[in-house]
Length: 171
Image 1 (tube, rainbow, N blue to C red):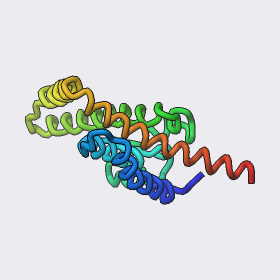
Image 2 (cartoon, rainbow, N blue to C red; image 1 turned 180 degrees about the vertical axis):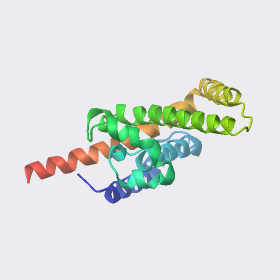
Image 3 (cartoon, rainbow, N blue to C red; image 1 turned 120 degrees about the horizontal axis):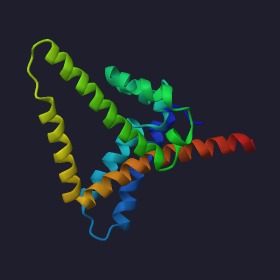
Image 4 (cartoon, helix red, strand yellow; image 1 turned 135 degrees about the vertical axis):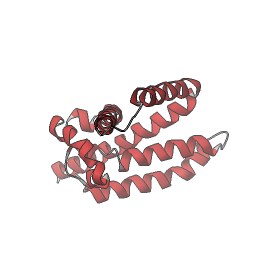
């Protein structure tokens, strides 16, 4: 399977190659859906990589926040359908990240409250959830473009692994 650096290059090259393809195939030439999809694709390919189940380039890219991915690494076997599943993998990583970030914020809020710093954590988390849900429901096409980019970023990684593994088996 390709190294993390090769996966990053594949992600960037395919994102750049999508520019002329999108221009040729798009009826409206509206850049907004393309920008949203490409941004989500790059985020998925570079930050929410299939290889977050190992101490990979993508894992190190998170810097100090990589601790959020330690439970994921312990729970998810490398190259399993959970991490490398087409469609399933990136969506599960988005859900996992949202849950891990929520737990981390809760711990920070509790620490602040323990130190006597008043924090209205329920107002903040309720606000994030309600605004996020409302935004998603009022912008369904934008949500679909973002979801498409997140899924395609993971699909590209999984396909690259499959192709390289298949070539190695034949060779």
